[in-house]
Length: 441
Ligand code: GDP
Ligand code: MN
Image (cartoon, rainbow, N blue to C red; front, side):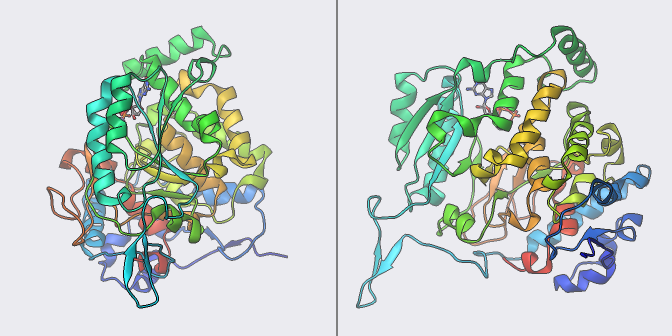
């Protein structure tokens, strides 16, 4: 009864809907535009596996259609989008830390008065990163948390030193919690076959994959992918804002970001979207498709399928990753609802990932895992690009054009030119954002 898969307009005819003066040439990046098949965002039907494959086939036929120009065209597009002056999100409910009394006088709510969302700032960190984490806490406080005093949770795989605890406490304006990961969660599971692991790591090393033979890095990726939200100390929270040592926050934000997520029905928020090293995730997509074949009911009909399967800018990545574009939200910054991960779709899929062992046989990152999960199993309208948060984790930056930002470079700067190819945000904007979402800032 439901017409499940609709053929929508080509990009070229939908550009004008964006109401922005984008050069048509910048938008059209090859034949993909004509092959566009999307799922009707308004229907609530479920997709069959055949239909899922149909929408996921978007990138497959264009493995060889690349050109060096595409990277620069996409960067031009990126800079054009960033040239727009942004303030706060429009058509959204925003909450501030002030009240007005009967006479209209404004009063700032104190830490004890302000009713916070059920949320925590969150970082996995080591004692040796104390200075680097303080560097970032100060910026988060200065740009945002001094208004709201959200709590912080510091997660470690080893006890934190007294110096670490005392020092971070001095810089956090909210409550501070320390949570140590039980060894049985942090350590490599006994189900991992040592021979297979050795061979896998050897292959990663030969291909020059970073952190290939660093076991703690594999532990970290697996933990961040599917375990942190199950820790005792995190069970009480719904929302988290992940931050990392030595990252920078450039823009003042006056409204409550967690309440923005909650009140505007968002699940996941990001600032930067990148391609990944396909050799780290060679089997992630095949394992996922196998899961989806058995469980098509979990795939959201309004998933971000094209961003997941694009093969225009980096066709060889999609090929090496067996159909996955490798596009992901860069998870060293993320704001999300942990109940999504705790839900049936993500949990069962994560069990399938664990069974496949790719956190150790390959080097699956938590960024592609969160991203594939949220892009397949959640409504893409619940994924929010924070255009107003200026952010830096080396070597990439997101610098808004806003009076509230102080960054060393101009807005629209992304990274050194030799890594421009890694930028996947243009795809997110072109393939997945609606007209209204683009107008939100
Ligand atoms: P990269 O950004 O992918 O290069 O990786 P990072 O070295 O920044 O690690 C990602 C996050 O995990 C950071 O917040 C690190 O502090 C943290 N991290 C990485 N390895 C470990 C570890 O062995 N123990 C703990 N406690 N944290 C770690
Ligand atoms: Mn990092």
